Image 1: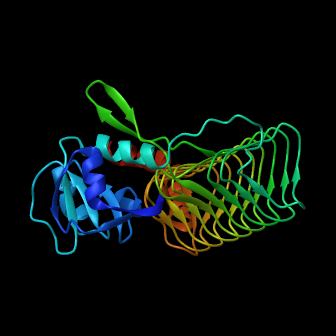
Image 2 (image 1 turned 30 degrees about the horizontal axis):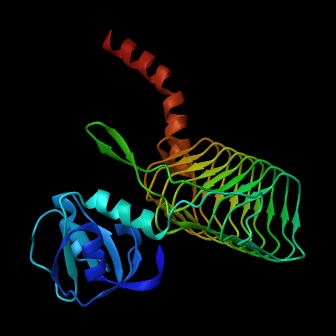
Length: 313
């Protein structure tokens, strides 16, 4: 999440009542989780085994709960509850804005775009030229849609990330303050759900086509000219490169990378990153030629066992 104006780190420290260590003259230009940080950003860490990753990241300001040596050029903010402090800041600088009208007055929609009945469009949405938004589509705040985009009935764009911190008393919700970017010439089928990033962007690349009832989790990045069939689910922060084809009911786990021009066959389960230019099938999915050889060998197993039994006699 990029801030509208840069904020002195001393002001941030005062807001969350944290002790500042290191370069206290820094300016904060954004607030992001560790997977999305850039130089000038603020992030947090509250588990010691991840301290090194955060301290060595691009983040300039880090909220943490233990005093450690401050890396050169950074500022550390000591706070007993880093997650709560981080969540407080995201709510402060991108608060929930109530909808009081069907199409927000802050939405920017090109005159050539067709908005059909019962479409709801939130704050700070932009929609480009020659788009077609079918009935009963809901577009949440902070969504950017390019030119020549079609979104079919019942789809929800920009819902909250399914992201919680586990605590002894239950689950505490991360405040979703990210965005959705839909590039030119994309088509999204009926009843799809595309979540915004927790703090960064969920992106669908130019020319990609998505069938009905597809779910994209927070921070997912889909490349250009991909084809995704019905009932596919892709978990948060997974990256799908250009030209990938995913057939129906395939499921992809979180934080993976699917290589350029890969093909994933129907009902496959993807638990690890895949190389591009190959076809995959099964659960857990494997390269198609290997999987078919394994299935062929498995079909011969009863005969092999019968022969072995006769030999042992």
